[in-house]
Length: 292
Length: 270
Image 1 (cartoon, one colour):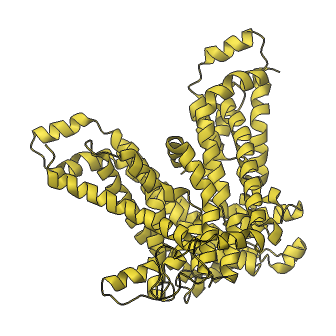
Image 2 (cartoon, one colour):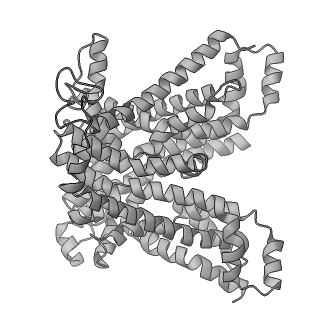
Image 3 (cartoon, chains in turn red, yellow):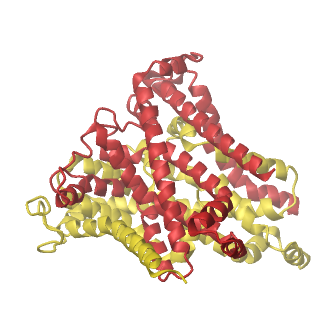
């Protein structure tokens, strides 16, 4: 077998699998959003009709969809910001040259990343328990009134955000740590010689040096956080209380797989795709401007 | 040089942070060792008054969690084996073998990274239903096998293999398949361990896709079984916590075992 044939043989399994189980369905997903595919069509595809952009028009006036979009936006903006900020601060602390026990801290902070989301959600559901959860016992210790964390529409999303930050910050921390090592020590020495304070070193050496890393971290975090699903599914019985934690993917799941409105659910997926594509395009643009 | 105050501030921040990370985990293990209802009375104990494995026994006897555990192991194991095999072949070919349309194909492959899995999910379900693969473990595994990201990772690593090494093997009369097994795979080992760890953890923890595909309780993976258990036994806090321990222990152990390697490997997976 020549090298040329071998090349095609070697990539064939991957290409076939990707084509059949990803490219084909993803393409069909776009088409699906233009149909009224429902439970009758699940039984027999001939029952599906082409409806043009009707699903998207319905979405425009669907209060629940806007609720889900708004909730997801809240989670992405507040949760994403907190998460990235904590990752950065922790990475900076761990980067100090005189620090002992770096490896141990790094391992501990990273460990939650590998934990099963569903298991963590169950643990936090109990942690947020009204009477005996650790959170309210801690509040009581401080002399504060207990909070009905997951039952109060005002507090349910903050509770989920807190959990997400706890679980995820170690991931970006490791990436920031890698980014920090690429900043040459000589830059700091020069800054110190010029009499720069710690804050000035951070502001004028560290932050600019971390720009590409920061862009990568922010982009991947936004994309990841937009796909919120398991946390509200497990912690708030699928988006409660009063839809305060209903997310886009959860809405897609419910419409598509609970009510079998697959055409409509596909339209939700397309909106999600468009948002993520927008984020990626924006970050590409910012990055390329950086390189000019 | 560095003031004592500053050192103290950094250490306190890190120690406090580590405590806040460990606390929920420790509490989970502790409550999982309590008798039913023991954590839900005043004053609520932090450590079990009398440690018992009752909850674990219950999970594995009456609630059949062992079956879900086996399913998860099968799914994650098959996904890992398949992914390592399929993606290492393709990644190596894209890096080192000369064949037509290679660069065009690779660029097209990278475009796939932009598409979130949710877009493909609804039609994939319909497709698998047509193939009679819904409600089967094979249906859960299938989307994990080939991954544009996995191919990309292996390719970047395989670029560093010297072409002369491969050409020398060819001159010696080794077939392309033989070269892949005997020369390339050993050299790719580090990246393949990362890919394996990343795939195993991803498949083990995945929730949405198995939830969609599996309807028969007997086939539930751990996260799906656990979520369903949490719906039915939401008042059994001690039982739930034991379930959480069972579901996470394997990945946590794997992580501890591969520590340095897996941190690097798992962060590649973004």
